[in-house]
Amino acid sequence: MADTIHLAQYFKMKAADKPGQAARALSSLRDAGLNLLAFSGFPRGRQAQLDFVVSDAAAFKAAAKQAKLKVLGPKACFLIEGDDRRGAGAALTGKLAAAKINVTALQAIAAGAGRYAAILFVKPRDVKKAARALGV
Image 1 (tube, rainbow, N blue to C red):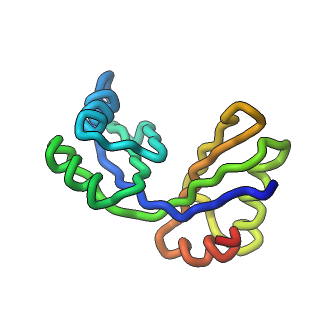
Image 2: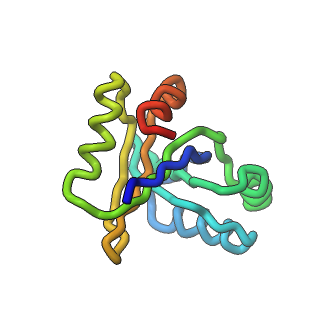
């Protein structure tokens, strides 16, 4: 079965790089009734960056505002899922390399039951070109 690739929206925020920051943000979004499509958090300089991939940008903005989360966005990313197989990431990044598009970030994970999922980020100026290269 072919991979399913969707163009999605995400918001990002800076947080202190210390225990509990992701839990605080995620708990407040949960309490607002929000369900995320994906989440990624990582250190960035002396802080952390939290990325929230959403299905409803307006609902996310309202929940973030209510929780006093200072978010930026929306921005575009790609959500990918498919049958887990050797070289799935190489195939995706190879298509982008052939189109001369740099991958900003890629997180992929085996999802169980023979499936995998990934979040792929490119620069905003490359989103349309990447979508064409990935067949979206």
